Image (cartoon, rainbow, N blue to C red; front, side, top):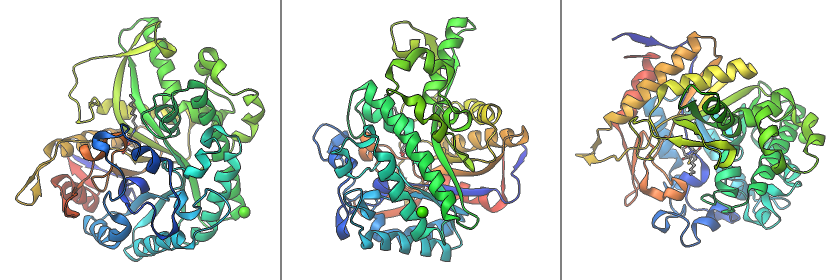
Length: 446
Ligand code: NCW
Ligand code: CA
C-alpha cells in the first residue's frame, strides 16, 4: 500500500445532466426536448422509462446541494436544459427557466461549490429538431445565440463552461445507431451532426471571448474508449488507430487544434463529410481553455474488412461493469497521456468517470465495493498521468446521483449516491463516503 497524493488545489467534483436528473420537463413554461419525445415514444427506452420525474432534482436541488456539501465536493458539473430557457429553441425567452438555474447557481456558491456548466447534454429543443436539428447548418447560430445568452445571464457567477457533452455520442448513437434521440440511422446525418457541432462550438467560443467574462474559461467534453490492437499486426494497429480517430478526442480536437479532420477519417470516411466542409475549417480552429475527457472503458480491436472503418471489437476476458463495459484502467492513462501528446491542451479535466453496478440497499446502506475499486484504479491512473506531464486540473465522478440512464432508463445505477425512485430518498453509498475521504485528504491509500 502506498499513499496517492494529488496536487494541491486539485478540483474534486461530481457530474450530472439536466434530462437525467431534473424531472418536471415541461413545467414553468419549458419547451419539449428531443429526449422527452424519444423516451415517450414506445420501444425506445428500457421499460418505457422517461425523464418525467427522474430524481426530481428540479424540486429537490437544495437537498442535493446539501448532500454535495456533506460529501465535501469542491465542484459540481451540471447541464442547462436549453428548452427551459428557449422553449422553441430560439426567440421567446422563458424567464422561469432562467430562474431555476439562478436558484441552483446561487445555492452552489453559498455552499462554496464551484459550478461547471455544460451548455448542451443532449436535450435539444424539439422545435429545432423539426427544423433538422444538428443536421441543419443554421443550428450553429441557434446554439450560439442560446449559449451567449447564458454567458450574459450567468457569467457573473459561473466561470467554467463546457460547450458540448460527448458530441460523438450525440452524432453516432443518436443519428446512426438510432439508440439515442433523435433516433436516426443515417451515417451522412451523423457526420453532418459532427461538423455542425464543431461549427456551433467554435462560434460559441468566439462569442464567449467577446463577452469578456472575468476569469472565464471554456472547453468541450469528449467521450473516449481506449482502442487497443488485438495483435501486433499492421492491420490491427491501423484498425485500432482508426477507431481511436473516429470515436475519441481526435475527431473533434484535430479540427479545433490543427484545423482539419484526422488523417484516417479523411482517408476512409470523406464521402460522409458534408459538402464543402473545408470552407469551415478555419473558423473551427478556435482556441479553447481546457479539454474535458470522459472515460469509462476499453475495447480490443481486430481488423475486419466487412465492418465500418475496418475494425471490430473482440473479447479479452476483462471484468465488466453492469453496462457490459470492460474495466480497463490502463486505458484511462493512455487516453490522458495521448491527448496531452497529440494536442497539448493548456488544461485537462476529467469531466466524467465512473461505473454502473447492481447496487442493493441493506439496512439503509449501500456497500458498493466494486465501485470503490473502480474509482481507486482509475484515480491511480489519473495521478500517474499528472506525474507524467498531463495538465490534469480536476476530476468529476459520474455521477452524483443514480439517474435516468438514457435508453437504459432507471435500470443502470452510476451514482455515488443511491436514489430510491419510489420515495426519492437519497442514500450516500459506501463509494460516496470513500470519495468524500479522498477529497478531504486530497489523497487515498492503494
Ligand atoms: S451513455 C453514455 N454515458 C453515460 C451517461 O449517463 C452520460 O450522460 C454520458 O455522458 C455515462 O457517461 C456518458 N455514453 C455513451 C456510451 C455509448 C454507448 C454506445 C452504445 C452503442 C452500441
Ligand atoms: Ca455578445
